[in-house]
Length: 581
Image (cartoon, rainbow, N blue to C red; front, side, top):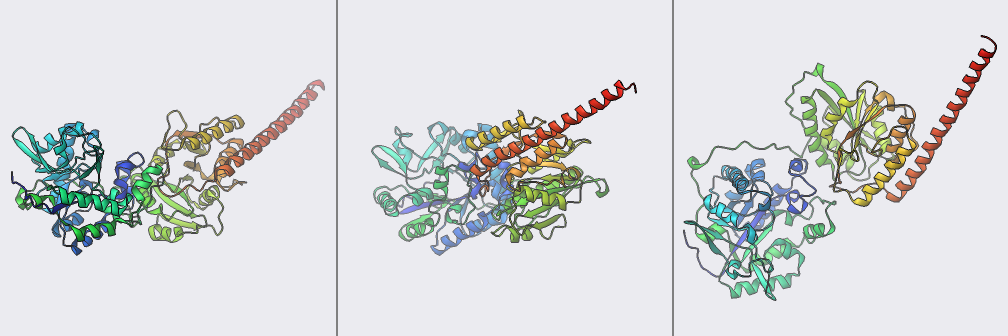
């Protein structure tokens, strides 16, 4: 093993190449299968970081997700072309605690293949993407050594976790059988006997610069070991999309002072000398083309710039069933790229399952850039129509406008924010059998599911559904879902009193009173990830009570009229019998 230079003033700079929606703190809200839906920003952020490093003639180690190398190999190649080292961050943004040793090996191999084919460099280093290694995770170092890695940079001495091994605060070697692996832990400071991290972008953003700079200066003056600094490319992006459904502390940690890190880094770059881990070890990552393993098959990559489906059509056009999908939009500019990516996948699967989807976007007099974004993303697609209300009328009115605009007899409605997975429409449409007028999604069905929705809101929805069951004939578990499949002829002529969220429940109420058959489909409701809900809670609660009273009165009047009619009919029958007819 090559011994590193012990030059005391040569420090190490590392960069995490990932996007804002990869962050482990969002894992509860964003599943890996949903990554393709988000508008990516890692490309522009990486170029910004590269330009910053070029200004100061600094070479760094970029820890890159294999997912990114598979999606955009040219970007990773550009990082390497500018002289930076490429190291492994795993394929997906996973914690070592999510994987068995064999799963860890498989993840290492898949990511390494993607990175090496993107760059032509040999990948010799690793850093875990989520949750730093603690004392119970050091088995992973044995796996890394066994897989031929030269170094790891995943350990962070925190509080008292490595108190009995103080040498783990500094660059050191880990031995496994006859193999050695360098470990470059994140730099920390000592406070009352506890180790506290000071080397990351988050700490630079959250704490006063004067304090952090003093701690870095102390390290530089006192220790011979290199100061190991890191940050992520998304931390230089104040304009990134906000995940508003995340808890308050998570949002503070992720978004606070994103405009600060750039000038803080510049200050450190002017003060200290930084390089990559490979440079510190005096190692080359150059690799011959003949040494590269076979190219792995890339994962699905979907552009966020436009809505263009390239389906594998299994049904000829004449055999496909036409379906209209109505998407009400009100001040949803932020969400529309996410929606576009999602619907691209939906249309592909619809064609493969014998449906010809036509999307109808109803802009409900948005005051932001929704209208322009709709035309940019969907305007050139012949399978899309855009309708605009001149005045805001509410989500139910927008859905009804879309239904009336539709040419197909089967009409679906969905939320713009995709809180229900639109792919589920393909399971709901077959339930619209003869005699059925509407199929409605039901997260409160025993087989349904609710994910991350606040408990207070969940409670209000269940209470309203309980009350509607007492008033209406058909006993459903959910009455307030916008995610439905309608028979157009049964709903197009409805006259709603409420055009807002109440109108969604009113639609089912009127159809129930008219004798329409309603079928529930157990679905999963997820919390809105992007943007904000437009619902006014107090007003909606009061409105539901008023609507329930009106539906109950209507049902009672019909009952009275029906009873009176039956009595008249029975009287006529009795009169005929008494006259001997």
